[in-house]
Amino acid sequence: MIIVLFGQPHSGKTTLAKQLPFDHHIDGDSMRHVFKNTNYTKEGRLQNLNRASDIATYLSYQGLNVVMSLVYPYKEARDYLNSLNSDVKWVFLKYEKEEVRGRENFHVADFEYPYLDENVLQLNTSKLSEKECIEKIKSYVSQS
Image 1 (spheres, rainbow, N blue to C red):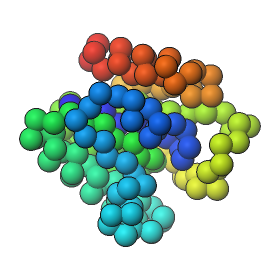
Image 2: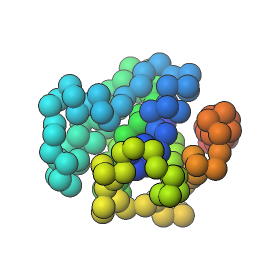
Image 3: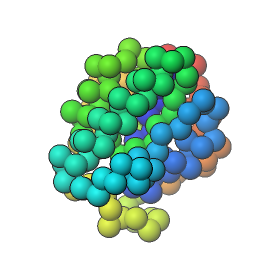
């Protein structure tokens, strides 16, 4: 199984992912560091996301449960991961922009927000505690 926590930078993706009991965690910042991808254009982001999707798929095929914390701003990238796997759970994290968390200058201007029919759990991390978010994620994963 693959769980993807996605949303704008500093929405709580990595913080929450580290609290989930999975075999392996793939983090977007770590991916960029390892592969030296500093291209923040749409093409550069897609390259990074597709690489992460390939790695998660490989790990999942090895029988590992994977949690991913990446921005995933483009539906095209989300569709790519879904095309590789039948067991992906998507969790979109958002927070109110009035709350300054320090990485707003890294936000993706052309972020494609999930459609209501995409079967995505949506959590507002400025209104829910970390514990509440984790419980909602666990419940969502166990129901699916």
